[in-house]
Image 1 (cartoon, rainbow, N blue to C red):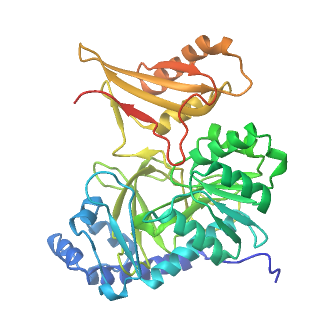
Image 2 (image 1 turned 45 degrees about the horizontal axis):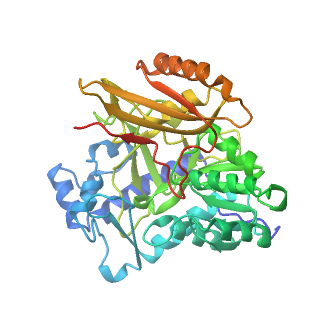
Image 3 (image 1 turned 180 degrees about the horizontal axis):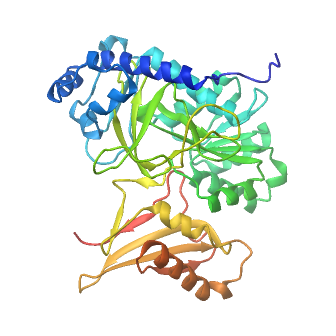
Amino acid sequence: MDMQKRHFIPQYTDEELLKIQTEGLRWTMHQAERSPQYKALFKEHGVCADDIRTLDDLQRLPCIDAEDLRRGYPFPLLCVPQEEVVRIHASSGTTGKRKILSYTQNDVDTFCQQFARCYELAGLTTNDIMQIAVGYGLWTAGAGFQRGSEKFGMLTVPVGPGNLQIHLQLLQDLGSTCFGATASMALLMGEEVERAGLRDKIKLRKVICGSETASEKMRQAIISKLGVEDIFDIGGMTEMYGPGTAIDCSCHTGLHYWADLFIIEVLDPKTLKPVPEGQVGEMVVTSLKKEAVPLVRYRTHDLASLVPGKCPCGLNMPRHSAILGRSDDMIIFRGVNIYPGQLSEVINKFEELGGEYQVLLTRDEEAKDHMLLTVERGQGFSSDVDAGLAKRVADQLHASLFARVDVAVVDPATLPRTFSKSKRVVDQRQA
């Protein structure tokens, strides 16, 4: 075997995956009943672990959400004795108490394993050098990127977010070949590389972005500025171990998720009924191996769709689309429901535009709402086109969203840059 290549991704037939998911669901239900919190919830809805025998029985179960995690603070939904917990991680939420998730050693091992799979699917080998620019601490990203890289067998450079000069120096001195960051941080890094004239002096070939979805415009800007072969979108959240639960392959036809570790349903966020494949709804997740805090129909509030059919890459793992937004991040503007992903789709249609944008919502003295979309002009385009371009974008938004949006086109690199997630929507309306 070529020792530079690792093999972490299992190959299953449809029948094998069905068996794994069925057995995993039944195990998860019995594990969940070890939690008084889960047991009370199941009793309230008239179900128990022994009632769940097939995947069709999943819909008999109630959904849980972030409030169930906050309600059991500091060890919500814990299904093992506390002495078996070896690590905790917490969400990056800013309101109320954090959602703390507990991990057994097996959970930590699975977390590392799923991330190693992502590196394999991205086409990395043990010859690659992984430079990490995501957050460390209670947040799962740093631990996931690092421990997964070490499990995979790569030289790992754990820098963290920010520290642009250190990143630039290590990119040159160590010859890092893969960069892990939020899309916003990767774009910021690309702009710094471009500004310093270092594109031909670094050896980056892959970028893996997590925490926020990169629009196609943003992807192309990162690829161009860093001179890399490809960029990959990695999925996950603290409740699902952390990042690494899904990643797109080189075909970029959706994110393959590890169906031997999770069942993903896409439900109507209002009715909680399944929507057809290809239709957008809320991702609801059930874990199959989590020991400390198993998930039973956990509402992620992430909006996506299940991608029908098989991927051309040949991997028999199902796919979901990129995250289009969150059901609780929906913009209600003059009675119209708008998701940030819909704005990105319109922006992507104009070659004269870059990928960075910001929405400002205000309300005038007559209680009328206004929306201003500020979007950066693409590199190499003259400001002479701004007025006409803004009108064309506004017209397309009206046709797509059925809402009148004011549009301003500004110079490249005008909007604020961030080491973490970009704040796309600023709502200054009074309640």
